Amino acid sequence: MSLTRDDLNQIRGIVREIVKNEVEKLAIATAKGFEEVHNKLGAHDQRFDNHDKRFDSIDKRLDSHDKRFDAVDSSHRHVMARLDTIEHDIADLRLMRKELREIRTILDEVVTRREFEKLEKRVGQIERQLGFAK
Image (tube, rainbow, N blue to C red; front, side, top):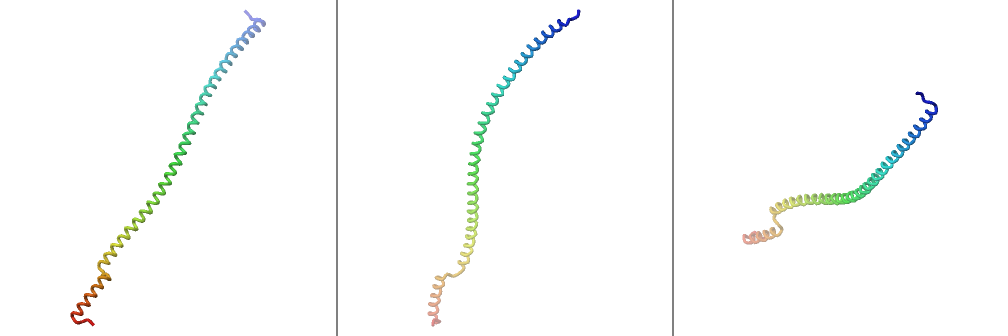
């Protein structure tokens, strides 16, 4: 059995019609798939936008915390500088106290002016009693 030209043209038309219908169905299914993917990506984009907004607010809060930490750090450095000054002053006072003790030790061994005047008066009285007075 051999196919005639009309048979082949008829088969070709049927095949073209079937292929055309199937290609259209495939195109529609592909378009629906892309639309679903696009919708899902749109939902993900919205979620990412929400995450970006939340991260922005977190960044702002962290920036305010950084500013507060900088202020505390500056205050801490100021306190430490003052503490260093106080420690230096205390060391100077301790040195002065040591020097003052040394001076007191020396002064304890030295006769004061009042003691000297009293001694001079007593020696004068003794000299008069002994007859050495002028």
